Structure formats: C-alpha cells, structure tokens
Image (tube, rainbow, N blue to C red):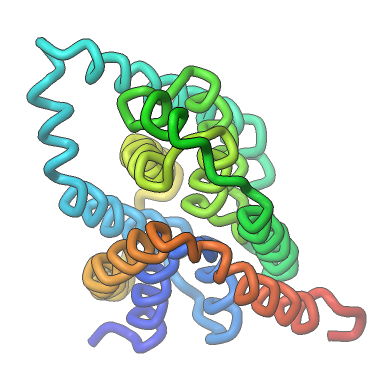
Length: 269
C-alpha cells in the first residue's frame, strides 16, 4: 500500500497548485512536518504532471480553439507567440537560479519566508483600481495580451520556481497589474503553465530518472490524489477570482509563512 504521507502530499499538491499559496512551498513544509523522506524531485515532478493534466482538461475548449485556429486565425498565432515569449522569459530566470534550487527545496525556513512574499503580492490586489470600461472592452482579452505583459508574466513565473512563491498567485497578480481582466489573467497564467511544467518535468526526470518499486507506488498514489483534488481547486480559484477575492489568501500565506519561520528558522528552533 502507498504510504499515508504520499497521499497527504498528493492532496496538498492538488489543492495548492491552483490556489495561490505555493504548491512547492507546501510540499517542502508538509514533508518536513511528516518527516517523510519522499522520492524528492521525482515525486514533485509527477504530481506536477498530474495537475498539468488537470489544466489541459479544464481548459480543453480554449485549447481546442487554439489548436483548431493555428492555420487560419492570426489572433491564435499571436497568442502562441506571446506564450512562447513568456515561456522563454521563464526559462532564462529558471536557468539563472537553477544552481540554488535543490538547496531551496531543502530549506523549510526559506519556503516560509517566500510565503510571506506571496502574502504581500496577493495583498497588493487591494490597491489595484479596476480598469475603465473602455479599456476593459478594448485591450485586455486573452487574444490581446501584449508582448510586455507576456514578458513580465514569464519573468514572474520564473521567480515562482522558488518554493513558497505561488506560481498562479504571482502570474495572475502581475497580469492584473498590467491591465488584464481577471479571466484573461487566469487563462494566460494556466496556458503558460502547460509548457513550463512539462519542460520542468522532463528536466527533473533527466536529472533523477531512477525510481524504486516502493517509490513508484507512492508516486502513483500521490499523482492520483493530486489529479482529483486539483479539479476542485481550479474550480474554486476561478470562482474566487471572478468575485475579486484572490487577496483573501494573503492572510493564510502570512500565517503559514510566519509559522514556518518560527518552526524552522527561529534561533534555537
């Protein structure tokens, strides 16, 4: 049977991949709380693949609209160019900080500190003024994402490689500050996540391809739980985002981050 710890980690991954509270940061913290010596980057990779599949299925109509319009629709080709630009920006940031990634994932204290950063990012939405009606209609749909928006969202996603920085949180908030609507910000964020998570998964497997039989059972179970809970989480996120309540998660991130610092980074802890 798979371990209870692997099932808990799968549940944590599924819920926190889409909610703006950092799935990677929570995996680090929960693993340390459970004293679970997980299969490391392999488990992280597989559960990310499971939640990537959730994105593909949840946004299947939009993806089909993109695939079917590649040859005949300039707006579709333009969107793909913007996604490629965002992905390229993420890759550059990822390569620059990759030498420190393993150490970051071994530090629950750092994850706690980065959760405080995520809290501040989410809270910033409270100071965001809604765009004027004319601008809302004219220039911030998914098909009109500018190269500037694509670039800064891609850079923000690269920073979110650090555990504790929420990928969905920082990319959606940055897109909102850049003038995108709530719906287009979320859709662009999740569409950009698909190639990013797939590329990161391939990279992780190349670095750590060996999986034992016992690990394989834990990984499979964690992925299944992550997939199921991910559907619930992405539905919740879209509803809360539409209602302008994304900033609510700021308080949770602040509490989780401060608690983590007390547990793992406070002198004498």
